[in-house]
Length: 118
Image: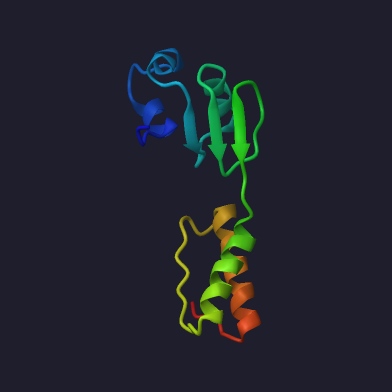
């Protein structure tokens, strides 16, 4: 398995879905900013599992996750272990996933009686 994103493939000149289909048997994709239509088009040529987005279609399967609950559980684990100064580092601050993770993190801090430290 090679760590190649569809964004990298799309930006590389001359690499089409049909060329890609001759080189790999399937893809695991972290969807990022790729449009649903592009993912669905590639999946018709190469079977694909998309992580982090709910999609369906021929050759396309997806795995979603609960960012809020995950961040809450991770932060709660740290607070229950006695940690009080827990940093939160996110990607793009206005991305829906980052906002959900921030909410889970803040919820766990609130439950532990720890003030948010921007």
